[in-house]
Image 1 (spheres, one colour):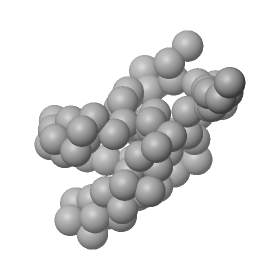
Image 2 (cartoon, one colour):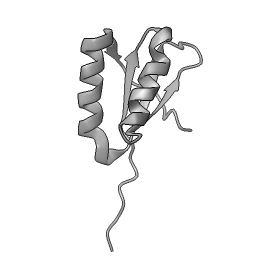
Image 3 (tube, one colour):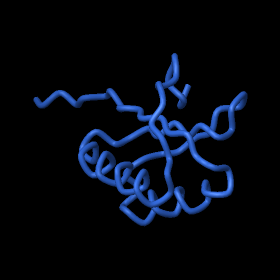
Length: 83
């Protein structure tokens, strides 16, 4: 029997709050490769919980958004944003 990998990679980005809707749309339009959540204490930080099979695609999308919108990568959360 094949064992499923349950770890979900998380990448965090700092964005302009006005861009959150567009970023969510980008993620959804790319087969829902990540689930974005904002941090309560810092709403300009998006934590992207990524489906493991889409990690490379998500990294490419984040890089494209860095160029397009000027987002920046930041340190990830101390605990899973899905808990």
